[in-house]
Length: 227
Image 1: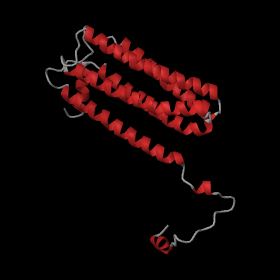
Image 2: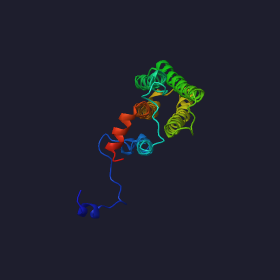
Image 3: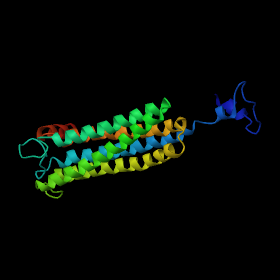
């Protein structure tokens, strides 16, 4: 539309709806604002973790930094515990997707089961992460004993807090399913929750790769960043 057409418009005159149209069709998608807000949140979270990773790589070039993987005595040389936690979070993300697909197909029981499984495995992931904290402390890897330790506790704590925030939002969706049982109106919110879970799972994979990297890999990444 040209600028001249815009200037000639008369907004005070109501134009008739097209044939077969309705007022509802003229209204914007109610989920559009929610999707935009989610994109904004994901962008902020992504930038936050990106900055953490950059500072991690920068700090790794100081002599007091000791990576958590590589040597036999380092806790993540054997990353079996982290692999287990990763599998738990992967199942939670998959369960969220199953719940979304079931809601779209109007399968209430399957949607509830998938959603319940997503909540269960997400809480299981958080508890497993906390147990890993206790395991590291029992081995003497305290937060202030090594910068790499500090970053591990910081990154996992921030990631866990974002999952807790997602659970709080998901509680509202569960409340609506429990009282409304209108899956047609819940597919949109469930889709946003599923995207959020998939995003946090992707963030965790990046953190997992970073925290289990050997000193040589960390130094190579730091060199690529100019440190």
